[in-house]
Image 1 (cartoon, rainbow, N blue to C red):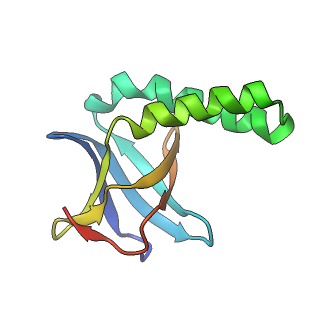
Image 2 (cartoon, rainbow, N blue to C red; image 1 turned 90 degrees about the vertical axis):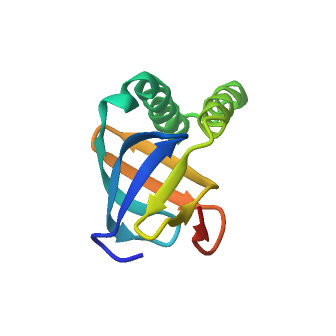
Length: 114
């Protein structure tokens, strides 16, 4: 993935926002996030995910980890898609959004036809 590549974040027919790749790291792709109004109902879930990530960085309490996993499962249950121009992208990925900054990690090595 090259910096400047744009993916739309979609849930079914709704476009929740656009992610513009800024850097590709070893473990995740960094991006800016430009939400649409359709993202608003999901913002609280991503805020909770970010909160748990920060807490887990300082505390490895198994109960906290269990809560974080439940939030992550909630995000995965949304069945989001990252779509790039040409109708290709990712169906399976981990996604973190904090304000206008995002990172994602595809769980498949290659983009797929969507």
